[in-house]
Figure 1 (cartoon, rainbow, N blue to C red):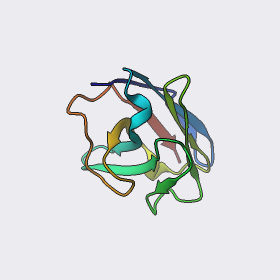
Figure 2 (figure 1 turned 90 degrees about the vertical axis):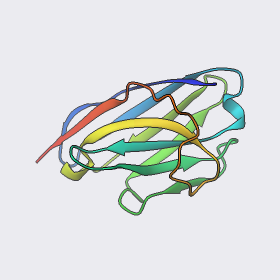
Figure 3 (figure 1 turned 180 degrees about the vertical axis):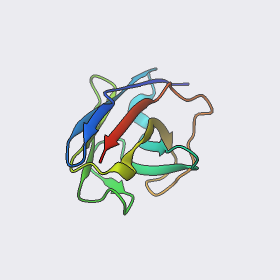
Figure 4 (figure 1 turned 120 degrees about the horizontal axis):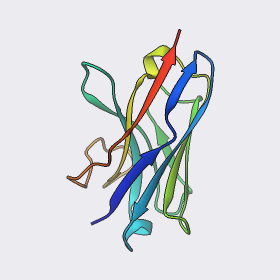
Length: 122
C-alpha cells in the first residue's frame, strides 16, 4: 500500500496559480498511474488529471484542460498539479490516488490522504 499526503493548497484570487504536491511513501509508487481528484462542497468527488507511471502520458478532465498540468518526480515519489488561471469553480479539496488506467475515475487505494484545500475567490 502507498500512503499519500497532499499539500500546497491555499486561497488565491481568480486567475491566480497554485502548485499542489502529493508525497507518496511505499516502494511501489513508480508502478502506478497517479491521478488528482477533487471534491467541492456539496458535490461528488471528481477526477481532475492522471499521469502514466513514466510521466510520458497525461489526461485531463475537460474542465481543467489547458489550465492544469500534472507531473511526477519518481525519485522523490511526488506527483504535482500546477494550476493556472484558477476559477471560483475550482474551489475544492484536492486529493491524489492511483488509478488502473488513464481515464479511470475509480481510485485504487481505499485510504485517502488528508487532501489540500484550494479556495479561489471571485
